[in-house]
Length: 170
Image (cartoon, rainbow, N blue to C red; front, top):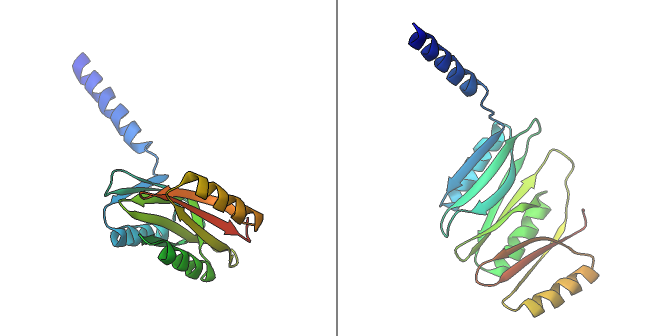
């Protein structure tokens, strides 16, 4: 009799823990950029917003999302070339997207930048991408960009330092 009561209490306790599980956060992990873009968009359609991204290893990226009442759209920019990154960030900004600073990361020799568009009016920031192997050069370039009204929003690596700066909305 004691054992059956103990088992019944254990089952009820396990059920209460399972019921109390919080579905506030969603973790996505994938190796393919296209797959990540699709999964983020599907999660956003279900009411999730990107919180942060981080590389798990050299091939996989992990993105954490949080449940929200607002609706967002996402664009994942991934490239190995600085000029391409500059162009794609500028094009995305023109379309109303903004960089999520906690969701800029590297994957192998690529820089991955998650950009978000919210329900608020269109923000049109300007972005400047700096890329160099030398920290002294990076310091000078960041200082010059700052003097021109830019603010550092993200720093990533891919064999060299990549700094992304923003002007016009913060």
